[in-house]
Image 1 (tube, protein in one colour):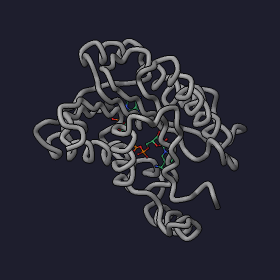
Image 2 (cartoon, protein in one colour):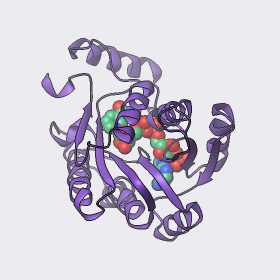
Image 3 (tube, helix red, strand yellow):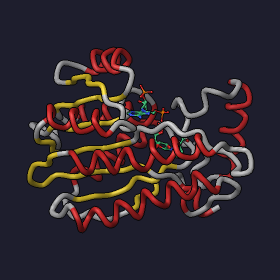
Image 4 (cartoon, protein in one colour):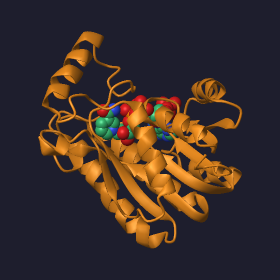
Length: 236
Ligand SMILES: NC(=O)c1ccc[n+]([C@@H]2O[C@H](COP(=O)([O-])OP(=O)(O)OC[C@H]3O[C@@H](n4cnc5c(N)ncnc54)[C@H](OP(=O)(O)O)[C@@H]3O)[C@@H](O)[C@H]2O)c1
């Protein structure tokens, strides 16, 4: 019960890594707020997790909604933001509208949350990037957004002190909504081919991020860090 009597807000807690995090922090005794755009989906997962779990709607791309959300929330002990929705691809073919929306969702959204959230003593804020920040390959746009998130967090660790601000940088992870656009067979082939390259021999799962969330919320000396949860993906 490492998080007993603590309020943990997970923006993007209704699926993928966010859901893994919500389940893990609930097991550690936290009062959990699952927030995302689709309130019904948040309510469904909150009712499965248990009694001290609530659902709230937020759209991080709207400053007004972010401000209102945190006004109603009051003081938070830990805020984790795995939520984002990006439409990225090669810069030659990705429309400027999609570029701006992706930056809005994954970079400006967390920045607005950091601006409006009210934190208690010993609080933490955790943002999410991705290993493309340091290994962009041909994903220049998403790589740059992830790198911006990592630099933002390091700056915020000074600006928002004593709130600890860290980043979890995921590698390829299954059982999320990220690859829903792909046919299942192609998706499984991608996971299995990538797993063979990784030192741990498997891709990530939402549970891995639950464990990382417990570490980053409970270790009071981790601050301004980028924690790679990628099975060693940056090494290969
Ligand atoms: N999956 C991977 O392999 C992978 C690899 C590297 C990095 N990452 C990064 O890790 C993070 C988590 O990824 P995931 O794959 O677990 O995500 P996911 O399954 O796609 O879930 C995204 C969550 O964010 C919410 N969301 C989306 N846009 C939002 C907005 N504007 N405001 C509030 N909530 C919003 C979604 O719910 P609603 O749609 O209802 O809002 C959902 O709860 C993301 O930042 C992703 O870029 C993922």
